[in-house]
Length: 147
Image 1 (tube, rainbow, N blue to C red):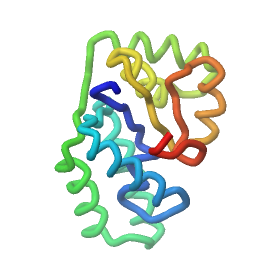
Image 2 (image 1 turned 120 degrees about the vertical axis):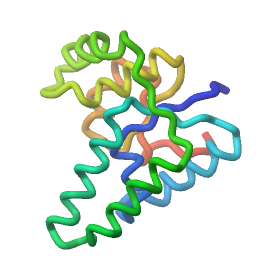
Image 3 (image 1 turned 60 degrees about the vertical axis):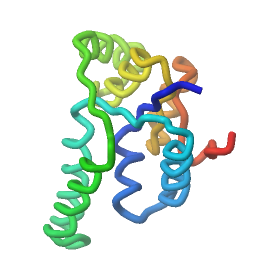
């Protein structure tokens, strides 16, 4: 088993807000913790999670205080943020190869490639685009932690 797993913002968000696949995301988090697997993400992940929490606040679904507490909880969870210098160029390559309109998600793939580990997402559309090309990408709704 690899020491790392890369988790994207869509999966991390499920640890903070109850929605579809939250239970699976929580099960994965517990399993990784029990296995001693380190959870990694590029530095942009907390920015994306903060933006998603902001949208919930703007819609009146969360209070500002609750959203702030949740992002702080994520940041104090032991999540390791990485920013290797080759990340950005490789993310551009991957985003182009996968036909993505934006390069954000490709940063997670590039980091997983750099760390030699799986990249987990809760974004089914991205998973469907990436999985035929990138074997290490996994989707929370399709695979369980016991696999």
